[in-house]
Structure formats: C-alpha cells, structure tokens
Amino acid sequence: MTRRAALGFRMHSGWGALVAVSNDGMLEVIERRHIVVAEAHVPGSKQPYHYAENLGFRQAEQYIAGCSTTSGQLAATAVRELLSQLTKSEYRVQRSAILTASGRALPSLDKILASHALIHTAEGEFFRSIVHTACQEAGLRVTRFRERELEECTKKAFGRQANQVRQRIATLGKRLGAPWTQDEKLAALAAMLVLTASEPSVPE
Image 1 (cartoon, rainbow, N blue to C red):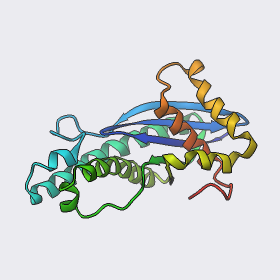
Image 2 (cartoon, helix red, strand yellow):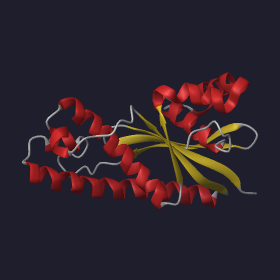
Image 3 (spheres, rainbow, N blue to C red):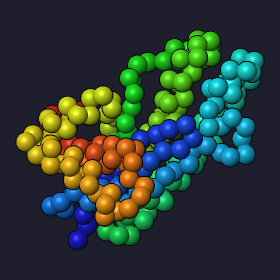
C-alpha cells in the first residue's frame, strides 16, 4: 500500500536539513539528512554573494550564475535520490515545504553587493531558491513558510491538536537519535503542514 509523504527543508549557507515525514495515522519521520548544495572545489561557493562582493560587477554576475548552476545540480541530485528511495519504500511524495525568512523582494545585484545586510539576505534566498527549483523540477508542489509565521500556521492547520503535533515532533529525537536539532524539528513541522494542505487555512 502506497503511503503519502512530504519533504521539509531548512536551508543554510551551502547546506540544509531535509526531513521526509509521513502521517499514516501518526506522524513519522521516514528519512532525514543534511544535503550539501555548494561545490567544494569552487572558491566561495558556500557564501557566493560575499565572494562576489570583491569582484567586478560583470565577473560577479558570471560567478553567481555559475554557482547557481552547480548548486542547482547538487540540489536536484539530492532531491531525486531521496524521492527514488522513498518510491522504492512505497511512499508517494507530491509536496514539499521550504522555510524562509522575511520573504521580502531583493533589489538588483549591484544594490545587493553594495549592502552587507542585503548580501546576507540574498545568500539565504539563493539556497532556498535552488532547492525550490529542484523540487519543482522533480514534480513536487512547493509551499514556503515564513519561520515567524509557522506557529500561527500550525494552530490554523491542526487546531486543538497543534500542541500534540509540536510535542510529537520535539520528542521524536529520543527515538531517532542525533541529530534532532531545531533545523530538523522545523523542517519536519513544515513538511507535516503540507501533508495536511487540503486544509483551507494552510497557505499555498
């Protein structure tokens, strides 16, 4: 019997936490791993905008485009490999969730490179966008959740059971073992939300 599952991501500079969950009557984490989305042999690839800050503008454009290609390939491979594994284990994955920060629109590259704060913002969005594209190319529907709104989304989706869901996720680490950090917990919660995305209160 095929069971439904969903993927959740919490990204960092050059890597991210990926958690797959299922809910066959009870929330279960069926896979978790750290994925690497920066090519080790490319200088500065973990922080591409920081590296590009010291280049000429045309070089910076080309450098970031190159990092986008190589990081995109790594993300696509990681997503495909996990989906293949889950399919063999008779799980059907159609949805994914990515945790985001403020979600504000970024200006042009020259303005980003002129602001250290925007460089940090752009790098966070860079790796989230890489994973977003990888999921879409794999045929998954992608939902983004702002971290600061995750609590409210959980309450709307699960109502009186929201505390139970959060507690269940928090205590899973005792059975799963390390790592079960905030990265994995939040990624699992986001994935759980999209598993119940038929709820009209869960944002698309």
